Length: 179
Image (tube, rainbow, N blue to C red; front, side, top):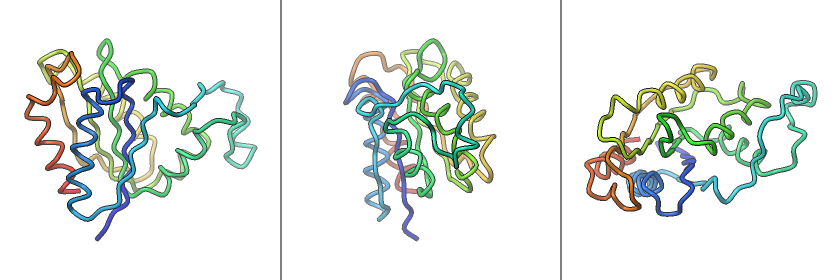
């Protein structure tokens, strides 16, 4: 069965380590015959949630006129969502957290999604990325029927391209192929 995948790359650098792993995942998923779209969050205008509480009484529409409504619609219509972030101070970066917060208007419509998480960090130990993973899990615990299908730990990647020497490259490709 062909699945519709949405990859959300929160790397602030095009060709950054987490973005490279997104491309590997995408290559595997496309080779398996799936439909794949990658959104590079840096290229999108996504404002911070201002906690105005308007969206519940506004038909699930945020008052902000930015790119988030389009991204959220794509998330709702995807079968699989891949969320990728570099790890900053043992947590996801601000771009990813802002995106998660802005799903509030329609998060209840993000039902029955297969979820994959990609994390890259300069540190060499996977256990030091658990706080970041818990942040993703906190988000998906609020979604009906979300299923965590895979996690990629891209450790030991500080400079652009460091990840290319990591086993995470093949893991991302194979995980994408097996979606």
